[in-house]
Image (cartoon, rainbow, N blue to C red; front, side, top):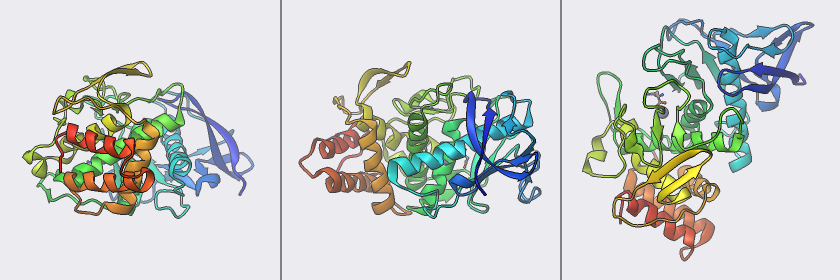
Length: 346
Ligand code: ASN
Ligand code: ZN
């Protein structure tokens, strides 16, 4: 069917346009035919395994939500906006047609579980599951744009390098450098979604999860990852990285990416102040976010594999930079400098 022009009042991104599907005279559903039928459905606060495919959201006038977390459809507006923004980001930036590059639109389920303070990419359904927050640490539904960008990027990563953790503990926590790269690149491209979307109510920055009502004001950040005390994210590589919890370990390459894009030292971007340190006291001059993204994406999709560690990630990104700019280029040299600055050296 032809897409129908709807609008949504989101919780985190203001009023947003949505393309939907008309199913009857006065009935629309939150499915976007122009983006591979990307769709958001309702898990009805049920736990894994008990909601099936979830329930479709329907609306009579194609004006969705009221912009508050108490309204069931508003979280769905954010999730659907995240789907369309992420789909568009990958297409526009890398020419990638959907998560699996097959034109299929992503699927999401909101209101997942009872007081869940997390969001997940589920390989089983190849879909996103969003909790409404635990009401304590995470005070908001986890449907903000960078969270969606992060989770759907896990889908892209699964379809490409498919990083695997070296170890999973009894609580399901993952460890190791390939798993840390998984979390890090999900942050790299999650931030990319924010910057490329350029939503006025959700200003782009290098913070992840700054809208989730956390006491430390963000979940992770890329300029100086160790400012995250919640997960204990690190700034630099050391031997401990080989067996570090993957979110904590993600800081190594996220920090390298930030330095490659923006450089070291103090800087203000979009109203947020950053002060990115280097392990070796060096000064790094950034090559800009666009080039940094292209280098990391090329490395992810051509050179990284399920067991890639940080030192191999360095080689992969150097190879990507050499392909695109040559070995004598500033870009190549800056990739090298950025990894050195996080203590990943030859
Ligand atoms: N939000 C977490 C993540 O995407 C959920 C998880 O998979 N542990 O990393
Ligand atoms: Zn993740």
